[in-house]
Image (cartoon, rainbow, N blue to C red; front, side, top):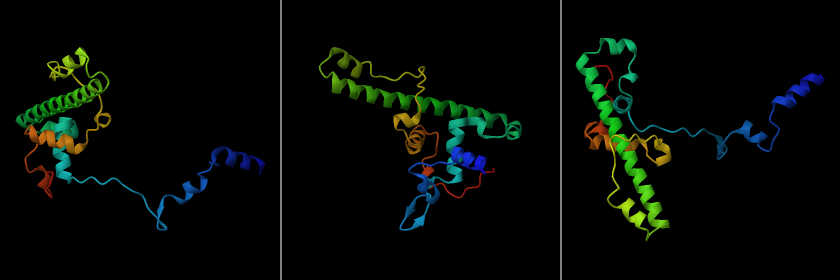
Length: 165
């Protein structure tokens, strides 16, 4: 009996939120869980992920039976998508750094140089910052892909299309 109490004390939470863990979140007496809802259809997500991840979204068997031209097209679009996304991230970083320098060093010659002629993007530089830390959402990425003609102009209207061709 004594050992059982020791184990309970050791593995059970006995803090100020003990009751909250058992009750969960509630609104007007109803327990609920707030799930994030993806506003895009299965087909829209498929097109988006194909540009972002390329052939890795397919199984090994699907890639083996896929025509060579289709594989090449998917890889080409993935490279273009990665380049587009990389340039977009560089633009965001440039805006952030420009704002920082203009706010804290407004009259500095370095600020004028950095925000002027050197404020460019480089296709060869790979920006390794993640999208979340730059405040880039899925919608921003999709809009950029539409702009770059990687996704169709009617992307937001696509619904109910079966994934198997």
